[in-house]
Length: 47
Image 1 (cartoon, rainbow, N blue to C red):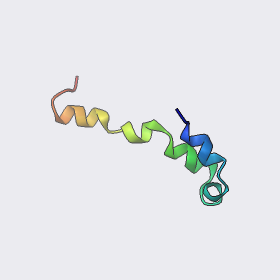
Image 2: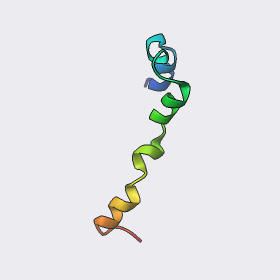
Image 3: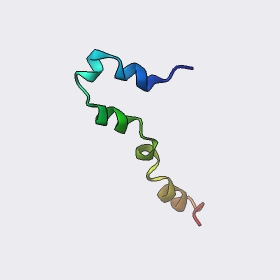
Image 4: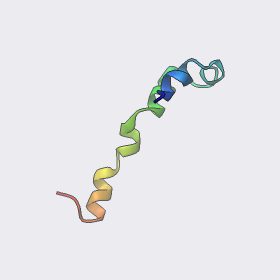
């Protein structure tokens, strides 16, 4: 299994266009899961 983030961080083409903070943000799972609770509520799986 290959960890994709270090590959991007080592690629000069990527780092010339994205800051380290932007790369970190892309790989932050919280961004992609921030609405999970809302979705569960909508489909009746909330608390």
